[in-house]
Length: 248
Image 1 (cartoon, rainbow, N blue to C red):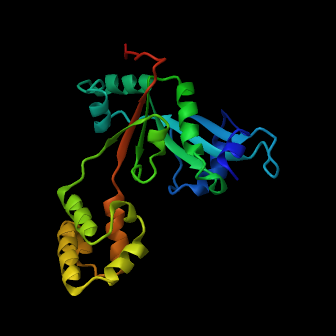
Image 2 (tube, rainbow, N blue to C red):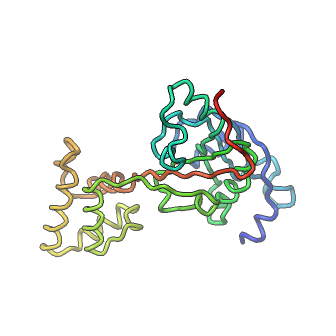
């Protein structure tokens, strides 16, 4: 299926929790999003064979935003900072919505549909700011392709040092999402290289409690990569058609 032949036969329409529930098992989070503000779904226009018009192919969920988020303050030049909690909450509720889920049914991934869902629905939420926080946005930057601006969180020094150590051994950042391949690479290192990466790993795990004594192997590699790739990136989009509302 080619993007050009499928996407033109798909339409974005207002949706509901029933659409999300049909696709939720395709998302890495099991918990439900909430509190939900609005939902849009991607469905067939009725011209595609083997796809019923009522069957959701993709879904995006917009939720109410957290009243306090440090990267939001950075992105908005502290527009929401320095207020009492009640005023801050009212201001955020009037001006901000958060993208809490974007799910595409597995058969239709790789066609740019996630970016399309974000790009085409953001203006219809009717608030000045749309934001999102993605743990691995650097791996799949579909939010940036949809027009959002990324604000990566700062990495701890020990994280940067271990990523650099892996890179020196030929394991680049984009490969750190596959524990088995990384473990295979570690198993092929020379004794000198093994000693080098073990020092870097022990330094990284020093503050991880009982995990610092994990024995080398796939389980330890999986744990390390989970921590290395858990780098949240904040995304924001300013609606050019909506002005900020005050909390009065």
